Image (cartoon, rainbow, N blue to C red; front, side, top):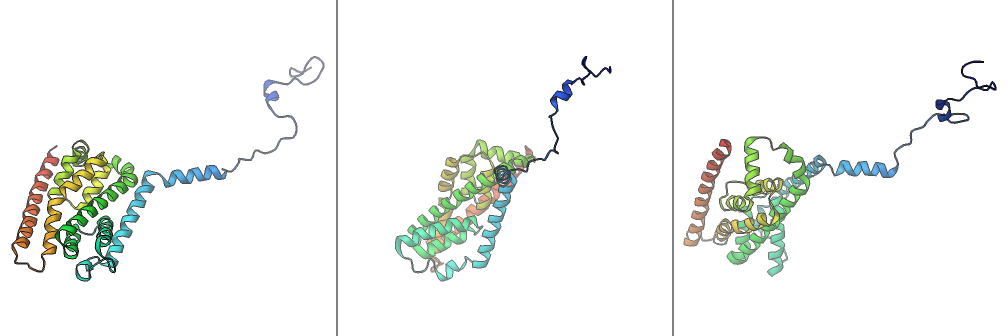
Length: 260
């Protein structure tokens, strides 16, 4: 009797034999991922930080291309919006102003158009509302679509310093950026979105800091027909002074950030 047989002569079953299925065996077939699993994977890929950043780049590129095709500088020559008058025209212009700022249209051009179309008072109101709308929309797009992908890239010393300045002193930093036009409007929006600045200080600083320069451009646009008038000359002088001050502030901040 062999060592693997029991006393009655039948083969002895080991623990390994007991674990094997009885009967004919079939090859194991790996189940394909179901529709739920496949959908979950697709959603994860689409919502990943780099996918969202790619969507933001596509949106901004499309907006810039649209601006180049439609030539918004015609606002000053042709007038806009057509067939809309009164308060409705101001509201439509303010919304369009905000959309144009997202698409990289220079704000000075839009401010001049606001003054030329609606005068000093209504033009200033429309331009300020459009400024806040555009800044808020850009901030939201940058925060939702770009922050998670871009924050790990803030490794350079001056980038970390700028991020820390915006995160810790958001209101003060954004107020200075709006008062002294040394940083492009769109760049300030997206830099603030990548930082940890809150919504309230960003929008409040944008609204308050944009008043002086916006008013100067709107008044210049409203008085463009009389370029020798004192009001027009004062507005242009204010624009020149703030532009020079912005260049000086940007230069000083540049050296300070490099020194950190």
